[in-house]
Image 1 (tube, rainbow, N blue to C red):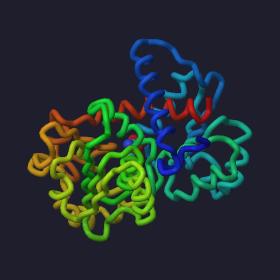
Image 2 (cartoon, protein in one colour):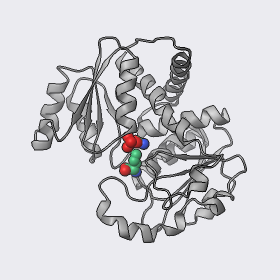
Image 3 (cartoon, rainbow, N blue to C red):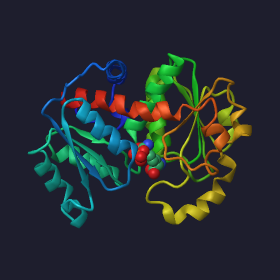
Length: 305
Ligand code: CP
Ligand code: NVA
């Protein structure tokens, strides 16, 4: 494992290794046992989009590992004024031990990894959000203890989250049903890649336009904002298109009784999900958010340790 750009690039063994180390680091953290595994190391964090969870969990995680993190907003660094990814990759590699980047174009993350000489971590692109899905899957494992025989239903936009969930579920062998409106399906390359992985893991993949079909008997129900970062001008249109894809109590009741509700956050109550679901007894969103910290610490140790 040299970078974390997509879950599709990881072997199942690598994914399991991340989960094992995440559990260990989480336990040690709760017990107050220090683990300075990245003492003296520095993570550069490039952000060209907003963030609460990603920024704070990486920065805090690095601190807890005995290292240091530098927040590099694209408004402040020369990328924002047109410096190339090539030069940025070459220069940052002379200073830092790893780079986390959140940006629009997925190809920028791939180029950073290609031209730099330190590990690169994808902290979200328009295409994928692998750190989030690894934390999501780790949360499922904590609650359900296995992926075997489980089904995750994703209801909403076929966006970076849906793409990453396809890759993630296919990798670990959890069935996934994705319900999106017509024209908002997941990326076709991702779908094909997930099918390949599912062939190995035994996961079943279903795509539908019917949220009821997708959610039926699901063990995990997932949704995300209808308006991702950068799509603000499409807001009015998307609210109309997605209105039947709201995860509300009525739709959620079609999932299994003990189904858990997940959302990467930030959430928009009254749009993609209603309060009774996201703030209800089946919601695991804050454990999920917390697990970003533990899982990303494991990722950083495995890449930069
Ligand atoms: N889920 C997630 O990545 O949150 P932020 O946008 O706050 O980082
Ligand atoms: N799909 C959302 C995820 C935010 C964590 C976005 O890209 O804005």
